[in-house]
Length: 237
Length: 203
Ligand SMILES: [Zn+2]
Image 1 (cartoon, rainbow over the protein chains, first blue to last red):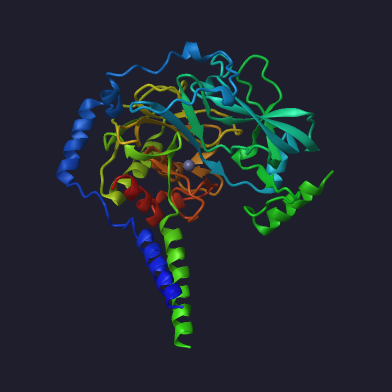
Image 2 (spheres, protein in one colour):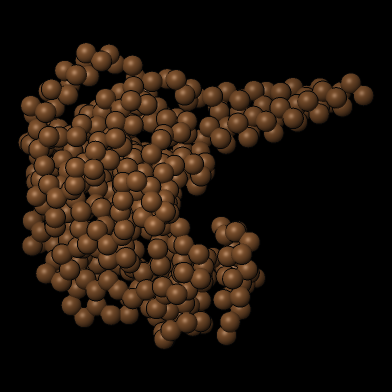
């Protein structure tokens, strides 16, 4: 009994210590004079990053990136990162949306499974100037049931992010898990390379709901009303 | 009997400390290639805003950056007096930290941050460039109107990404909360969780 007690006390102490690892007032209190000097310095130097990066290789020429790259993720070379390696992130703000809005905005609503095949798409910058500098990953989803719109067989669900020989871009767009089923609210596009069809993206970055192995839809992220609406949509044939 | 009481106390302490640790840990750090970043490499970043912004929008951007500087006590975001004219090619790496406004359609996010980070010899990533894209197709405003998105609100959030923070699911009033809505002003002011995240990165 005493052993259990001692263990419990030690455990709770440990957790308390862990939770306090970042005291809110542990600020860098560099003085105002120093800051002003730094600001003047910064303004004189122009772009901070430009200066520190001046000696390095510039980013690859845009024109070299425009061909469609269809390397499968499994084949890509996973070399160990080295100091000096540069990687990128795109983080997109989401706008709250009701399930009705999501349904309205969707071109198709499907139940489908991600079979694990995905590949990087490098946009052609003559096609859509808004996708310049972006990389996409297409995840192949087999449609099992179409609730809204027209879809058949395999579709590609496109997310921001991808890897090429010289770039590694990640994002906060939803990433599908292999072998998992989802209820997906999708809009067509974007078309970023020649002959680019049957690709979709998740509405607002929010229209994705996992289904467990027993076929139950996970609506835990929604309030009561939207959860109810989702279940109604899911039960539509 | 006594042991039961002590056990109860310990259980309470356990639950309390777990809850406390969850609250303290709710901030997230941007992961580059699956690895945490240690913030802006130079410990300051100079950004330029687009010359087409109205004076009110420039002020909103200014207030958003000052919120981070003032509340963290570390002058890290510098709004350059120089304005840029670029309204395309916004996501290419150009060694400048630009705030641009582009029509990206309502299919795309209202605001996006694109950040580049370099792996340091200590095994952590350091941010060396960041651009913020304002999607012109959303209704923007500087007054918190209930039919528009607020520039200062969203910009304060995006600056958080520029500084190395990731979105959070909780608390819902945090600047780094994952989503926004028309009329949302809550993100204009940093909350303790945002400061905890900043302090973790820049400790
Ligand atoms: Zn965000």
